[in-house]
Length: 242
Image (tube, rainbow, N blue to C red):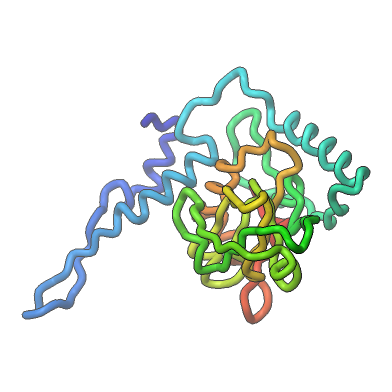
């Protein structure tokens, strides 16, 4: 692994050099060793990776501004054809965002995906039902599902479809990184816990795995936690920085 920024080492020196911590406790007054270095190092690596700081950039990759323009056209086309609802207005991006590699750009989830979309299907159709308990905190976004009739779950639950990305919107599930890419859904549709935000990228050009990893980074979760509102601690999804 090659680091192209020396500050990555100096800024996180405690992680690179400290893997254990002595803690009191245990029988006979013995001190317990807490192996916390690995637990802190893993999320840091993911955070740096999605920011493009672990490898050199490919000169042939198109600039992000072109990809965003393409997504804007796809979004407009779906809205005009009635396939999607007009999204909420977004706040301007902050001016003090960290620098990104050349060709990259900051954006918001509400710019690249439809938030909380709806499905259209017959009530008698089998579909997947995903309660929060079946959404894991794993980095691969694994989830389980139950089989229900669409008519039983289309009201009173959060809807999603094959390839949509679900993110917990309530504490502590959000801070724990409960997020999933919904896959292998019965008949391609599903519904589940109301404590979930769903993002449906405007086109297949969006790398869903990359988007999922971004949602599980420490920086994303801390940013979202700071913007939670209400007694239940819900996070506004469309303003999320990516």
